[in-house]
Every structure is written in structure tokens, then in C-alpha cells.
Image 1 (tube, rainbow, N blue to C red):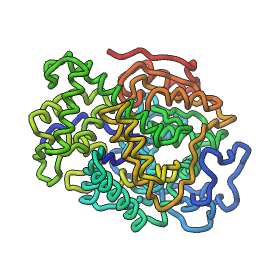
Image 2 (tube, rainbow, N blue to C red):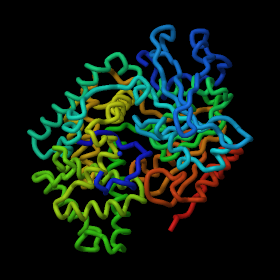
Image 3 (cartoon, helix red, strand yellow):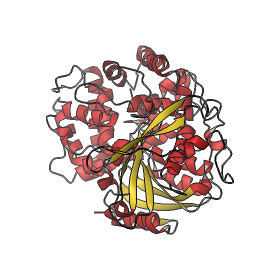
Image 4 (cartoon, rainbow, N blue to C red):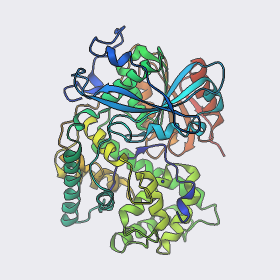
Length: 512
């Protein structure tokens, strides 16, 4: 079963994957009144906005701290939660302020992402800004949502995400119900308060605690949604926002968003094949796109009936779901294509170990069998951010349509949202355009062949935002900044450093 809606941008399948060894009661986010005219927080929120973070060293030049925020912004004098924060102080002498980073997800750790700041940001930006990361509420070090044990997550993720008969649908439904019930059993108090609107409010409290009059922010993938919601709430508190790998906030997840993601991964796989056919290590028997897709389809069907070998030493069966998830992981980043060629070559010989390790990177499963709470947070945030169908038949119908359009990945992605059918709290968000009226220029970056956040979403978000500026990249993979295009990097840096946005419609050429 698809464990998450695949909005995580920070993962990369390069590295050692192939080796022997990665508020209740609030109005909906899209319709909340902005705070453009608010010159100061309410008296009840003043203690949060005037707090100072107590920083302490946490290795490699980083400093860590905690930020106090209300559990429920509708009752700010009630219970508080702690938000984990990290920063890498600016390396140069002409500091501008802080740049807040979010890697996506939802559920991705901003703390872990910030620890990679030297690859996430250019030296020029690191020289002028403190690089700041935080785990959004419900994630990692910030009142994390907990639902299932490691073995239970193994079982859940390994469920057949493309059911072929009523019995398999029943098993998938049972797994989705158990996931939702586990979240309610272990995190009932948190579940109504982990939506993106609350995380955006936390981000404004963080901005104030950092001493910045206006926020400077780089959000990727789901982080573009967080940034857009922030802009809609606080358009006058913005210095510079970069939204890279954009999500269209007006689209419903089922069927529209999930169907588009299925199509996106199909496009990405075709791009992978075009490159693969020019490589001596390409594992497909025929150097023809349709024939290669047929070979992969046969592999997936075979793994559904007879799982591939797993030499990791754990007991997981490398079935169709784990194989699909491994392939999807490598499609996020063109730099992972060599690993995917090797992994598929092994899979055609019956060994699914490398595909399994790739999948582990995306779901953040550790070698000891434990997980971060990324999968659980992803589901919890999505299920309150968007209205989902409460009828299994709707998912079944949407999956059939998606499979016709995207035979390799469509049904798998569509069924991945099924736990939201059984979610124990109601959605507080709605699917509507976000305008952020009165905001300064906001740069939206889109990659033409982005598998997880299709390019049309970037165009849509840039057009919805009252001050949206579209910057495009003729490239492959998920997100564009710091992935190899000097054109993108220079345009983004100029905006971050000097608040000079590129001309809307700028297209950066493909990097060969």
C-alpha cells in the first residue's frame, strides 16, 4: 500500500542504497481571514510572540532550541506544545536575517533538512542568513504523532496497494482502519491540531522569536503549501518566499491530486527509460519504451504473486508494493537513475534488496526496523488539511480510472489515501485557491518533468497568488533549486539576497 502521498522532496536515492547497509475550531486554511492589518498579536498570543529561544550547541556548528506554541490557537491560554528548532548561524559578516527551510512531506523533518544546509543553500545565501529548520507540529521533535510500531508499519506499507479482487480490497480497508485507529489510540489529543494552518501560525511565532520583521523562506514540495498558507494568513509579514515544486491548493486529493501524481511518475519513468536506453547497464531486454514498460508491468505482477528475494536479514517480503515504492523513490531525483538501473537489473534476476533499501529511504525506515514518524505525520496532516471521501467505493472508482491513465503507478498512488476515509477527526482545511493579497513578489519554481508535483501545479499556484512569479526549469526530478541548474540557483539567490524577483515566465534551460 502507498504509505504516503508522495510530497517528500528532501530524500535522494543516491548514496548507500545499493550497498550492504535512510486547530480544531479554526476556519479552513484557505478561507481564514488574513492578518495583513494586524500590527501586533492578540494579548493572549503576546507571550508566544515575545519569547526568546534559548540556543545551545548541537554539533557541527549548529544550535538547537525549543519554541513554545499553543496546542490550540483557538484557546491560546490552554495547553502548550514545544516545537523543535535548529539553526546554522550565517558564515559572513553582513547578515541579513534568518531563512526558514521546509523539505516537504508533510512529515519531513525541517531539523534534519537544515542539517544539510550546505547542500540545500548556496554559499552566498549561507553567508548572509542563519539557516533555520523546524519540525512542524506533529513531526519529529515537535509533539510527534504516533500510530503504529515498526513491525506494524512494515505490514501496513507492504499491503497490496493495487487490489485485484474484493478480498484484497477488504484487506486494504482493514489496514487503513487499523492505521487510523492506532493514531486515535496514541495521539487523539494532537490529531485535530496538526493541520498546515496551525503550522503556519507556528512559523510566524518562530519568525518573531528569530527577530525578523519579515519572513524569508524556502519551502519545497508540501513546503510550498505551508508557505502559501502562511502567505495567505500573513501577507504583510513576508520578506521573500521561494516555493519550489509547487502544490496547487485548489485541487482535491481524491481523485485529482493523486491522479496527477500517478501521471507524473509515469512521465518520470519514461524519461528514465529514454536515458536508460543510452546506457550499457540498462537492464531492459528491448530498447523500446512500450516494451520496457511491459517488462516492468510483468515484474510488478510477478512480485504480487511471488515476492522478490530480500537479503537484508529482516523478514519483509519484497512484494509489489515495496517494489513500486522503491522505483518511485529513485524517480524523485535524476541523480538516482544509475541506482535504479542497478536495482531493476537485480530485480529482473529475482533480487529485490536494493529496491527495498530505496523504499526505506522514502519512508524513513532505519536499519534496526524502527521508523521516524514521517509516515504517520504525513497521513495525520493530510487527513485534516483536505476533505477526503468517506466511501471506499469512491477510492475504488478513482483507482480504476487512474490505472487506465497511468498503468504503472496510478492505482497505487490513489489507494494510498485510504486511511483518511476512517480518520477520527474531521478535516478543517478546504481545497481552494490561495491569493495572499497584499504580499510582495512570491517566487514559485516548477520543473517541467517533476514526478511528484507536476509542472501544471506550479503554473496554477503562481497564477493564484496575487503576486506570484513563475520560474520554470526544463528538467527532470522533484524540485529545481540546488539540483544542478545554475540558472535556477542564480535567479533564486538574487531574489533571496536582494529581493529582486525574476521575470515571471522565465524558463531555465535543460542541464545536459
